[in-house]
Length: 248
Image 1 (cartoon, rainbow, N blue to C red):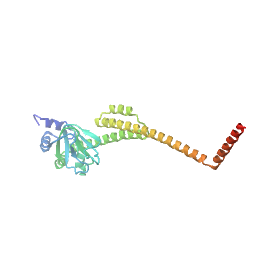
Image 2 (cartoon, one colour):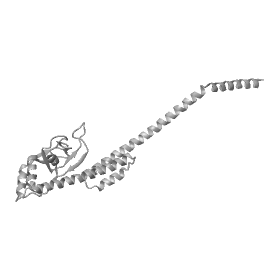
Image 3 (cartoon, one colour):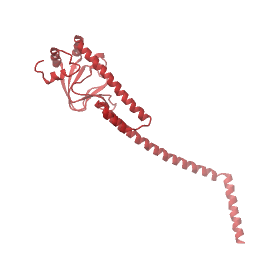
């Protein structure tokens, strides 16, 4: 691959294709299909058949769990930058896409069909090793991702809303997706804390109203009892007797 072009350099810098010899990289380059995506445009949906591998050329592409009411919306689980590959797992196990993918900004991608991909793996063991290495890295990333989320969820569930600590921790995370998630989680924790404070205030006000109603009911029960009425009548008679004595 003499006089390498930008595409050649992109393939050389991609972990998945780097082990391949130059003549095979030429074949790969010719087999790639370029495609442009607008910001927030969905690349593929969760549950769809996986028919191609995606290499990000420009921009960025996120994988995410789609919302039921808006297939293009959902928290990004990971964002892929130029030179990174996604979508190969569905080509390996030939199962539907486990997540959706969308462009986070105007982006250009290069798609490689499943047939060509599987042929490359069969003919070039070094590429299969690169795939396994990539899958191991995905597993480690997912473990870290779930670990961070678990810690934040447990804190909020336990009534701890230390948003400053979460934001501070997010600034130390090397992965931009986890850092963004931490920032969003901190905002959510702040909203939960505010709502909890409002509910406590409402409960306190309701308790005061309930206590007052209870006191009123107790007073009513006492004043309507026969004993109270008897005492009240005796008090009235005593006042009348006193007034009569005062006049004499």
